[in-house]
Structure formats: structure tokens, C-alpha cells
Amino acid sequence: MVKSNKIQKKTFFDVSSSLTASKISLYAASPQELDGKIVRIDLTRSLRGKSLELKLKVKAEGEVLNSEPMSLELAGSYVRRMMRKGADYVEDSFVTETKDRKVLIKPFLIARNKVSRAVRRMMRNTTKEHLIAHLKTRDSKELFNEIMNNKIQKELSFKLKKIYPLALCEIRMFEIVPEVKGPQLSNAQINEAARANEVKEEVVVEKKVSKKVKAEKKE
Image (tube, rainbow, N blue to C red; front, side, top):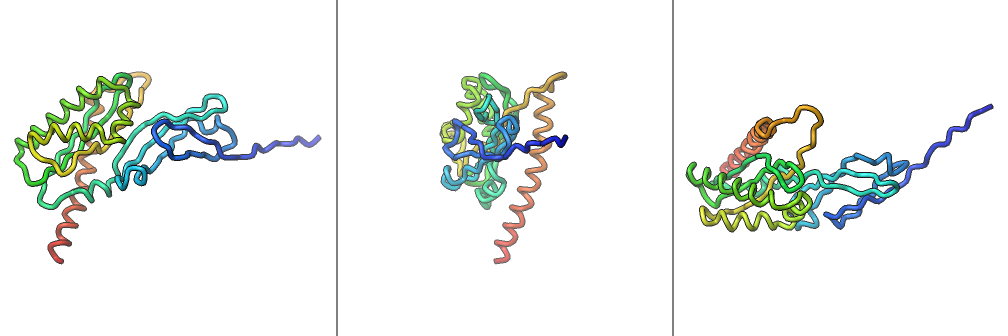
């Protein structure tokens, strides 16, 4: 007897998301095959040119596919485009808690001109204090919405203008910290890893900005 192996045909399955109106359709043989898959959505068009990427994790509930937000991140090209010649920038990276999850957040500020180290330190500390207090009163899904709608950035910018006027106030990254089974990493260990990555990113940004400035001087 010859055994007949039925090949399951692949088709497109819709994935629902409460954060974006963009239609998400994924190609697979079954909804269960898509469970746990990561989807990246470019929000540039819906945010009028701000290059923000939303990362979602697919969850299969029977035949229905839902998604939960994992991170929001500004594109490096957008950050470099916003850099101003002759102006200082301030950034930070730290782990804090919302009402339901632990998150990694990276604020990014650009002053209108050169500022002293003391002013930069004051801006960084005020930003951290404000964000920690704000995040612990909301759940993670509310915060994803607030960042996408620029609500957090506006409130923070208004507060920081009392210290020094800003050309840009953004959240460079907002990411859910995965729950790890077994030995838990301390906030200090997570922060140390995040800062190590941030230093690498800063080096790349500074090199590209310096090349751009040199090119402008030659012209």
C-alpha cells in the first residue's frame, strides 16, 4: 500500500492589533504555526514621517491570531537627521516598572544650543525622575499608545523647557523586558547591558555626525 501524505496548503491569516490600523496578514499553513512569531511594522507613514518601528509578538488563540506589543524604536537614520550642528544632546537608558511589566526605556533629547555639563546632568536626572513616576501609574499597552501619540514626549518637553529649551524630545526606545525563568537579572545587570549597547550606538552616531559636519565644511 502506498501511503498518501497530505500537504497542508498555506494561506494568509489576519493578525489583529489594537495599536495600529495597518492590516497584518501572515502566510502559513495554520494559525498555530504563527504562534510566537515576531512582526515588525514601519509606522513612518501613519506618524507623518517619524521613522518609528513597532515590534509585535503573535499569539494564537485557537483559530484567532492576536498580537501583543514588544517594543517601539526610532530608526537610527531619523535620529541622525534630527541632530543639529552646534547643539548638545542628552540620552539615557534605564529599566523601570509599569503597572504590569518591567520595561527598558531610552529617552533622547536635543538642546537648541551648546549647554554645560551641569545643565545636561539636570536634564537627564529630571527626565529619569519624570518617566519613572509616570510609567508606574500606567500599564504597558497604555504607554505604547502614549508614545505613539507623542503624549509622553510633549509632557516631558514642557517640563524640561523650564531647565533649557529643546529642539527635540523623543523616546528612542521602549521595550518590554522578557520574563526570564530561573535566576533573575537585577536591574543593575540589565542596565549595564543596555548601557553597553548604548555606548556602541553612540559611537556610530558620533562618527556619522562628524563625517556629515566635515562634508558641510568642505562645501
